[in-house]
Image (cartoon, rainbow, N blue to C red; front, side):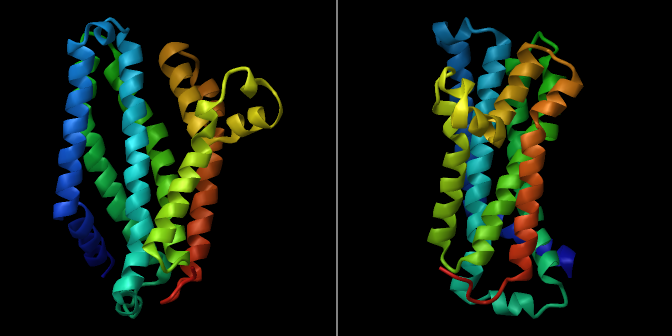
Amino acid sequence: MKSALIRKEIKEHVLSKKGIWIFFAVTILFSGLAFSFISVKELSLLAQVEVNMTFMKVMVGLSVLVSLVLGATMYSSEKEQGTLESLMLTPLSRMQITLSKVSGIIVFWLVLSLLSLPYFYALANGTNLFPKILVFLYLIAFPLVIAFTCLSLAFSAWLSSTKNALMLSIVLFIVTAIPMFLSTTMKKAGFAYLFDRLSPISSSLLAMKDYFVNKLSAAIILVDILPIIGFFFIAFASLYYASSKLDFKGGE
């Protein structure tokens, strides 16, 4: 029964027209970005490390946004369409249903990541960057994407409106990304410093810099990503709680 539900989620979100169009649009975006790095003189002069880091930032940011949209619509759309009741009458527990939905988004992200690999390989050609890109993509970026997915899915379980769940998910992403727009001086002290240190988005960027540019040890990188690890457990706990309280209507 659980495998059948996972297949249903994959069919609805990965193999559907919506999923195919998203993959097509992402491929066009990746192609345009890679072509810019190769053909535009100013961009082609950038070091390959910087080029791949820029491409990675686009990949991670896009992955988070797409996962937020998918997660925010999963439960709330079931409520709006009146199909959640029949889903909850199956022998599966609420958490099993939720994990099946998370599995659907994971498969979607894996396809998205596979689409990015040829571009990373081309941009890293002639260097030893590609194995490091794989490590960062699947050991650091992946948990970050899943954490945001869990929170957006929790919002979808709590709220009966897809619009509200999506809006709350996007606001969460924007709030965690605020430190990216603060000056270095502002982030040296006070609340801005604390906010920057705790932001999972800032943590991923710091880990990226220490990993690709500064080439620091694994222990330092692990310290860098502690906010991501903490964010992941908070997100999963929120999803677990939301699943246990899941009902047919939810709240506004």
